[in-house]
Length: 138
Image (cartoon, rainbow, N blue to C red; front, top):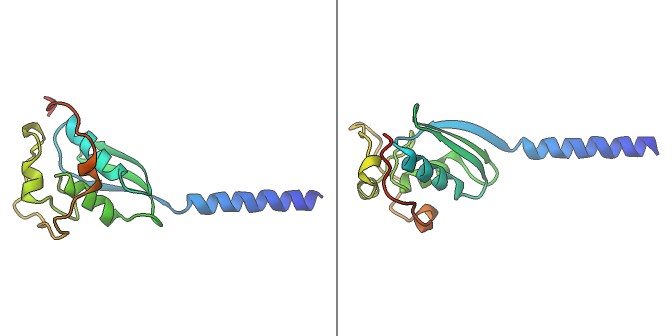
């Protein structure tokens, strides 16, 4: 009886560790300016199935994202963010996407940035209701 109980506990613990092992925690540079950018960037990442959490740090312009690598990839996460108008390490937002940002959200773009190569499709983010007026926290 004890051996069966111990075996069940070990198998349960191994299963739990295996499930947790599929999540990755990564940081990526994402351009932005203010609190509205923070909300937009985090929402764009969180719209993807498999993203557990996303936290953008305004001071160092980096997004920390925890995601299930069996459900999504960093490429898909960064694509969703660029579709919301923000340049990332991997992709640049389209000119039209960047130009749709409120004035306080427009950051200085690197003239040597990687150009938009991921198409002009619509992100799930674009279907989310936008937040209020532009913030003044730059």
